[in-house]
Length: 383
Ligand code: NDP
Image (cartoon, rainbow, N blue to C red; front, side, top):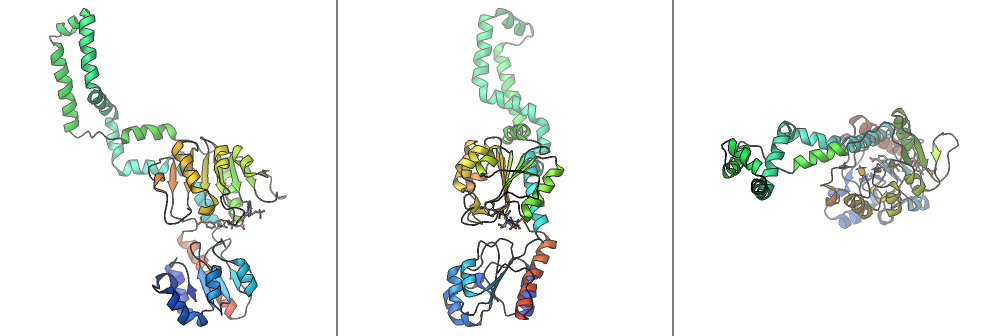
């Protein structure tokens, strides 16, 4: 068995090693040399969402019989080539549906309610310092505007003798007032009320926080995962609409034959379809603009569903309200422009990443391989 992806789960590796001779392709330095020496003995490939079996690899493995993927998505497997060669293909449907749908809802809540930012606020100790927010702002005002304050006070004392007089009746000449203000500022700063930009950010997210219940949710792909997301969002009283290639007769949600129309008519747009040549960049500039500055994009499908540079510029320019992303175009490389944006939540492709589901996925991968080699029906066949 050739595992083409980095080992996705220790249990899977342990179980494969118990039953088969396992080659971990990812950690083999000279892959060409390895394939030359071992190609005849490789009868199965195990891959996942990051690496599967492309045409080139399939071509190099003359005795390949089965590709068993530790994923439901099949976009890393050349299905046409497998079909042509009579190679069986299996994946891991259903067992991961709930986790991915849960995560999609989690992303919606995290983006709208700014959960990650709030967590960072507490961990950084800013919550405690926040008690001094007003005082610090006064200090910052005086520090930044001390010239204006001096000029204004000087001006007032010239044109308004009453004011000057009242300061005078307090027994405080204007010069003393300036010095007192400066001493006050220095005292505040020196006792550790650190002036930093987080105060402005706190204000921003307090303003930017939005509710989830009742927001309209548009879903691209109403398959196992899309439908599970819809059911969950319904419980939050969200009106649901969707786009697929053909309208479903068995659901009551509103159907849009075009993605742009769907985007223009929802507040949260979720990508949950399969990645194919047709759905690559299904989220493009036109769709993003239709979703608009108050819209939120959630991607739990695959990175290439989204034209990533377009998404980044829309978020940076404020043409899109926010995004919750579990997947990226070139994982694990995430556009750094997104790191500073507080209306964005970034996850390292963990849609199915729970202990329970990863074990069920591993059992399916192993069960399919065993079934194949024992000439039994495959558990979850694709081809
Ligand atoms: P399903 O096969 O059940 O659903 C796929 C959906 O995609 C169908 O509703 C299909 O509808 C739709 N679809 C296919 N082609 C198009 C198209 N051209 N335009 C619009 N819709 C289309 O798959 P799952 O729900 O189980 O999984 C969906 C995807 O989620 C996977 O392919 C995978 O990429 C991703 N995923 C991500 C995970 C993560 O960790 N983030 C984990 C697991 C899956 P129709 O055929 O009617 O057009």
